[in-house]
Length: 500
Figure 1 (cartoon, rainbow, N blue to C red):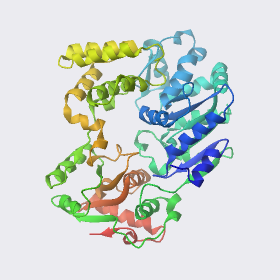
Figure 2 (cartoon, rainbow, N blue to C red):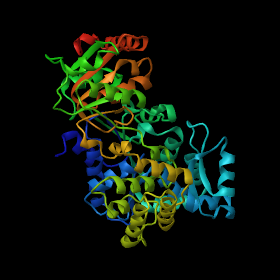
Figure 3 (spheres, helix red, strand yellow):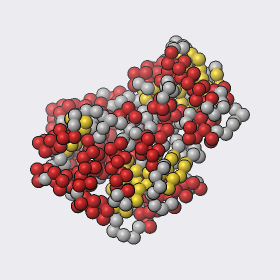
Figure 4 (cartoon, rainbow, N blue to C red):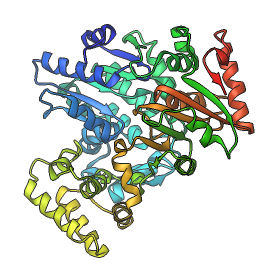
């Protein structure tokens, strides 16, 4: 791929920069190119930090970069503040009691900041608040970076640039911390995000923080609106959903790429099948896993083999060892996943420097040998985790055992193998399909979180979007509110959607 004119501008723009990147505009491609250029252009001892929300996203950036990144930080939000702020400098602020080994376990909940401090002091556990809209880890990091001169000097001496992906998913505490690094420590900052794709407001995401940076005088701003994924009709539909993109509407003569199907619970699957191309990729995206699974079964029963991609048992593990359970599962389940892949997934905060391939392979083989003996399997997993410097919990090893032994979960590790899938729209973020099926009842469109959810689901589609409208209250709300939204720019639903 070549950089588009606006992508090239972003790559070449120096200083603090915020980029609003609509769905399908190539934001990761652009950010990777910018990181590579600025690493090449840097002739000092300083390094960059590329910060993401998931280990998977961090790994994608690593995989795409062709420059030497061995000295640079590419990892998650939490791993950055834990390894670069909390662990090395907490004792500088709170005293020698905190010169101890710390581990994360976000399933351990506290009510107050002080309770969290005591949990670290007494048990060495970095935990989370019971109220998931507040963030103990970043509250703690903020206190430390403000009060520790050594921490300030360390960050200023080490980093010449910080890149933050998916900024619309940051919560208020994350935002306050990152703006402190930018505004007070003068560390150059690159931010990319899209408030329209904020689907985690329910767990504390604060898209208003992203929008507030657009008004900061020390930030330049760019907009990426050229969707390279979806056809013009789907772009029109998704752009009309939100204020900031309505002026991108470009009329088309043909509107049969988005179909609203008035259906019943008994006939929706057959009506869908008469409106899609079975030879092209397809995703049924639902709000709940149960509805996604039921939908896959109905489509399959009616002649289109559709694979449900489930939530795997290890997906809800929130300790710092979570990556290892996933890596072990992949080692068992994926044919071409090797010991080298396991090593490549060791988070930046892990100490892989002195770990030998042969030892890790031997420990993995021992786990594999004991797959039919759960107690021996558990002790083998514990041995590998201990060698890599990670703690385990019995209930988490049980979830790993279930994930590996129940073959129904295996499809979740290689969904790309299947032409037609069903999953939740939360799980579809970052993916794309020729055809997408959504249900009107999953989106009331009465508030911005619901509109953002629908935007993310609709923009997964490249060529065709099917909206199934059953005759119920929630589906009727969807249609009425969609018309109200489109009316803001002088359009009717019929201008963009074909009714059947």
